[in-house]
Image (tube, rainbow, N blue to C red):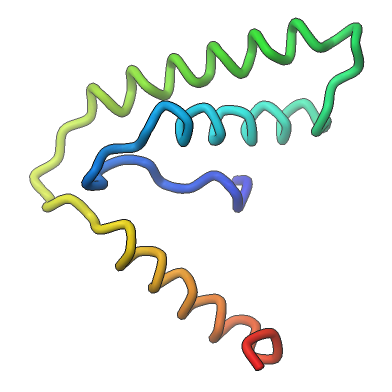
Length: 92
C-alpha cells in the first residue's frame, strides 16, 4: 500500500472531498506507475481518479462504527512519534 494514502474513516471532522481526491490520486499514480500521465493517457488517468474518489466517498459514507471518532491532531502526533523512533537521526 502506498504510504501517502492515509486512513480517512472515523475522524472528527470527517474527511473532506479534497482529502478523498488526494488519496484517489495517490492510488491511481501508484497502480499506473506514473505521477503525471502523457497527453495520450491524461483523460483516462483523470477519469480513473474521479471514479476512485467517488467510490471512496460512497464507501466512507456507508461505513459504520461504534468506536469514538479519532482526533486528527492526536493521530498526527502519534505518526510524528513513530517517525522519530524509526528515523532517530532525522529528528536531530
